[in-house]
Image (cartoon, rainbow, N blue to C red; front, side, top):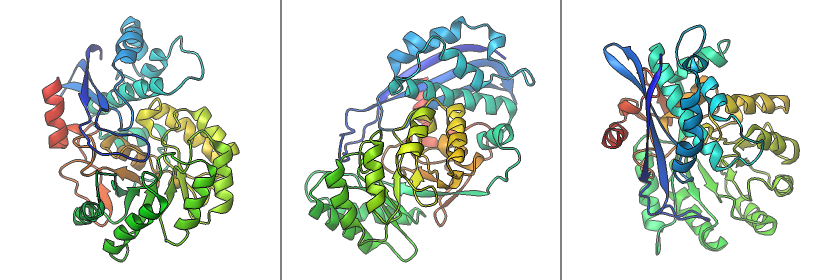
Length: 388
């Protein structure tokens, strides 16, 4: 099996919304298509990848640094010795040649984007859905779940009085089959944010829950003020109250806040996760971690993260990856994670899952199609067809 071509596209996210820190209207996304000489059931094997929202397109890093290393490699270096299929772990090692430790950020996103495409093609070549291919390679002694718990992430800020629109949005998620939802805080006054929270709680039926996300907006004092106000509500979690690398502030908040804290979506390496576990003061049996594999070098780095967390008393069930798309859904199933984020209406067509797997009571089944299943989400398939 050989790679015959790799194409890259850069597309606008086209989301006119804001969280407490950034506006998404100018944000872009990288898309990757990896072509091979393999044919399965009469169809050429092509791997597709993209990265999660919140980071800009990685065109320069991919074209100027990573892909030239891949092109220079001997074809046999890319293959799994046992199957002759492209090995995404080997690809990751090759594209990271001559890179110094540290300095993760956008580099981790570029590698993670390519990693998604490589796992898509490897699973397709093996004739397996991605979650089964990952499970067989990394966690063969565990049991695969039939469904994965998912929650709807939204509740972004819009211009003007957005409470009526916020309530309408949440009702729409409930109508789609979601039980738990998440909204943004920190982009308004604390008083207004509490009104927005209460407006959402008003429309949630019994059995549904609310999480809130500050996107790293606060310093210690404001984070604690919000924590005190949030104690009045039975929230799923209070997410990213402070900068993701400010472990001391995380520890101080954890000492004061009796509810669940969540963080990790902006940690892009196993070393950062190790430091969070060592110094962040988070509680392994209570709090939640949200590392996103396609923003953090891909599956093999995520496996290392889980191994480090295990040493510090964290179980996979406390992990709910950020991103809200099919790649992370497959990873959540393969590694027995607690669940997965979903963006059912916000970051289309990248967010959400396959057309044939609707959300039922907050759970989603895994598609049985080989690979990630990008072709089974019609709007995403159309975008890839347009670009490639």
